[in-house]
Each structure stands twice: as structure tokens, then as C-alpha cells.
Length: 517
Image 1 (cartoon, rainbow, N blue to C red):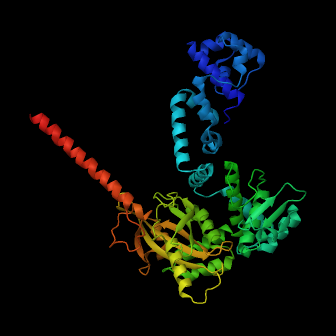
Image 2: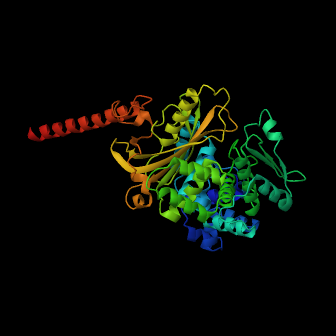
Image 3: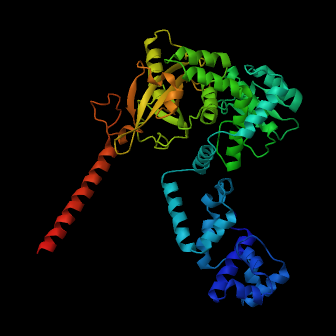
């Protein structure tokens, strides 16, 4: 929706002038010798009439023609133009959520001042907290994933079709060389695995795609693991298979400019995971792992080794399949980054299909709960490396540790909530020495879900209450030895609750005393 679009500007002016003259839509349409529906479409910014019709409308509404067709608006319409031109309404993917931009236009024209005030308030909050448009776009993507249950049947079918066409069995995982061959011979790509990794500025990027030259070129960072390079090539095949043109040039985001870039990148990545890891095989492996009578970390690590993919690719694949295939729809996924020796843990990625709050978007001023399985594994990985006297060199990025635990989510009130099984893996990052990544897959184990996850009742598993951040947690020091900060936000909320209760009691006594006198 563009505030400078002549259709919208014309519609604004016509509706405002008609209302000023006290004319109904029917009266105006009759005087202008046009249908009510056509005039309504003009006012809603859907149609722009021919000059002869505009002349008639200008005469009926006693509006100078030149002023009517000008893009300049009167002062009282500036707030509405601000709304339509704001980043929120201009860049947010309204159509992907079933909202017709013209319907929004119709909604805000009825109360431009109030809606403009709301949009300005949101804008000021966004600026005050340094929230960029990417935050809105990625939040929209997460909502889109949640709405679809993170499962896209058409992408599953397309990837399965392409696997069958190449004669790959269920347990065939195409490697880097095979995927490179397909890109080069079937799609005319040039693949460069040298230049990007050696670039002093772009060396942290996983891949860059150049489609504007004489030959499409995929620059892949040679410092990545072979499994990571294979995923990037499968992702590039996804863009080709889906016929996607609207896309970002880099796999690591510099900035997200449109929702189509964000959504198309996600769809290509989804296809890549489905192409690498056969749906039925992954479901069978999930059943075998979850159906075991006890937790066996070596079983999960062996699967990572057999599939030759990263832990994140494997867990993402299960996030796509478990809700629809095993009925485990209440799940969440977290990726946490930790700089060794820093004591800081940052949430880098989240997908929440559950009904509980997960720690995301709080900001660096708070400390994420140290009991989250992925964070516990990161702390363990750091301790193991510190205890190893022969660790002068960065740990190999292929080194992976795994763990599991039962957790009880903590409500904001401090009361216990739903029970989850958390499966986690942690490893060093290939492109950023000294930075480790911890992954957590949380599966709700209340009700029927408990029957599908046999080892969730394994008595050897640790069980704890898990919150969002230390600052919001109501567990006392004796109940949580992992606390990294004082519960200042929880204490402030408790203080407000006590004040409300005291105020209500005081006013209640005062009213009772007045009645008695």
C-alpha cells in the first residue's frame, strides 16, 4: 500500500469532500450518472476513472479539477496519508494474512486521526527500542509458520517427487559433490568455494548468489562443514525448483527488505531439508528415538552422523514433521549462541508452536533461564573445554554433545504450567571460532503426547522448573542454584499487585465506613 498512489489519494479526497457536503454515496452516484458500486471502488482506491468521469465528479462535488487530481492533500488528510505511508502498513505482508490492503484503507478512512495516532504510537515505541523492520518481517514469518503448523505439504510433495526422479532411496542423503553437479550441469551454475571464505569483510557469510552476471554463480564459504555446504546447494536448488525470483542475495541476512524475501528464503530452506532428509525415514527415526524406554544420547548423535547433516537441520526437519505425523503439535525450537568465557547467552532463532512463553526478544538487559537444555549443554561444553588442557586450538565444529531433560514451564504468576521434554544438542560454529551454538527442541508431554514419547518418563532424566529470564522468575535462591540475576522484574510486578490489593481494601473499608455513618 503506497500513500503516494494516485488511486488512494483520489479516493481520500472524494470521500472527504462528499461527506463535507453531506451527500450519501447513492446521491453522489446518481448525480454523477455512475453506479454506486463503481463510485465505492473509486473511494476505496480500487479504481481510477477516466478524465471525463473525473470532470463530472469534480462538478458534482464542486471541487476544482486540478486540485482533485493533484497528489497534494489538505491538512486534515495528512494523518491518514501518514498511516498509509508508514513502514508498518507499507511493508507488513497484509495479504499473506488474508487482509486486503484496500480493506485496511476503508477501515482507516473512517477515523484517520485516531488510527494515525495509533500508528505513530507504534512507530515511536519501535524507534525508542531500536526495532527494525526485519523484526516485524521475521515475526510475521514465525506467525505464518505457526498458522500452518510449520508444515508445507506442497513442498514435501515436490521434494519427494524430485528424490524419486533421481532414484534416491529413503536413506540416501545427496552429498555436496552430487548437489554441485546438479547445479552445474542442469541449471548452468558456477560454484565457487574459495573466494567468499578468503574475503576479509564477507568471510562470515555462508553463501552469496550472483544472478545478474552472464552465468549464475553460487559463492559458498569453503570454511563451512561439507554438510553445511550441501544444505546451501540444496537450498539453491530449492529456489530453482520453486521458480523464485524475489530473493535475497545472501544466506546470512544483512537486512530484510520485503516479506517475500523472508518467506521465499524460508520456503527454499524447507525444500532443502525435505530434499536432503526423506520424510518417511525421518518420521521412522523420530518414532524409534522417542519410543525408546530410556534416553540414549548416543542414539541421537549416531543419527546425526548417519544423516551427515548439521544438528540444526535434523531438528528443523522434525519440527516440520512431528506435528502432522505424530500429533506432537505443541513444540518449540530455540537456538542460543554463546561466546566462550563471556557468560552471555543470546537467543538467535526461535519457533514456538506451543501455548507457553519461550524466551525471545527480551533483549540483552535480561538473563535467559540457565536451565534451558540448550544453555545447560553450552555451559557443559565450555566446562569440558576448560578442563581439557590440550585445547589450545578451537574445538572442531563437527564435535557435538547431546542431552535431554523434563521441564515444567513457569507462568508469569510463578505457578507451574505445562510439562515438556527438551532434547538438546550443542556444538562450535565453523565460521566464528569461540562461538558455540545450543539447540533445544521442546515437546509437550502432557496428555496423549506422553504415550508417544516413552523415554519422557525415564527416571534418570533431570526435571526442573524453567522460566523465561532470571529477572522474571519467582523461584527463590534455594529453589534455583542456576540464577544469574536477581528477580527485579518479578519483584516489581509483585509490588504492584500488593499495591492494587491494598488500595482495593482501603477503598472498600472507606465505602463501608461511609455507608455506616
